[in-house]
Every structure is written in structure tokens, then in C-alpha cells.
Image (cartoon, rainbow, N blue to C red; front, side, top):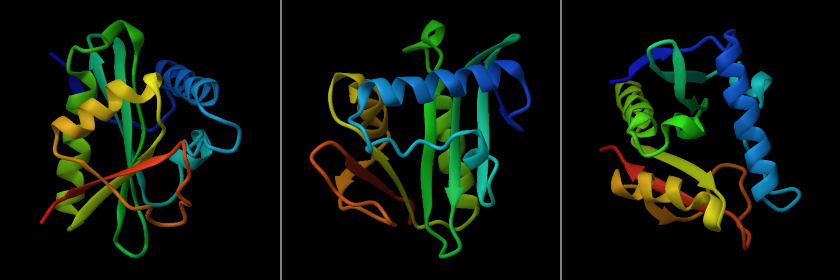
Length: 153
């Protein structure tokens, strides 16, 4: 149903979905608690972005950030409102997991928020086997954020 492609972030639909994602993160998070990557961050070294497409329409976006120490993080997961609960996000997440495995990543991690706006994403991650855990990288744990990890060994 969805075609997954590596995305260079030049298409208007991709940029619009990224803008929607960032606006949603800021609207649903306390000040100083948004760690979503903007366009420049997603174009940085070690970051690969994938999008799911249904025909000519973007359905979902997500990214894998691999750091110099070999750890990896899921970034910027967002499904377009027209494609919620249709498998677009899951398709992108599976692509991210497969890419992390190909890179030899042993543990894939992510940081997300708390509250109703984050529940659908949490359910997606938990269905795929991510479990709550400790902060990683430069993240500082707080009351709002939470950390999930998936063992890829």
C-alpha cells in the first residue's frame, strides 16, 4: 500500500509534513522539551530520512540518526493526519529498524514526550518491541520526556 523511499527533503510535501511535525511537537510539549530535528538537523551527517507514499501523497516520515560512537536514534516520526492508523508509520519504522541492523547497531533508542498527543506513537513503538529505559546520549531525564530502546542483537 505504501512505497517507502529515502528522502532528500527537497519535495514540498516532505517539508510540509516536517513543518506539521515540528508545530505539533511545540504545541504538545513544555518549553525547552522539544528535541525534534528541523530541516537542517535532518540534513546533518549520520541522518537518513525515509518517507512513505500513497500514490502521489506523502503519508509518513521518519529518520535514523547514527552517531560516531555507533549508537542510533529514531528521529522525526510523523504520520500525515489523512493516513493515521493505516500502517504508514509502521512501514517507515520497519525501514528504520532494518537500516539500523544493516549498520550493525545493537540498540536503537528514541526520546519522546508524555501525554495524549504522544500515546499513538508510544503504542506503535511498544508494539514493535521498544521498552522504556534510561536516558541516553546528551538527553537529561525530566518529568515530561521518556526514553525507549529496542535491542537489535
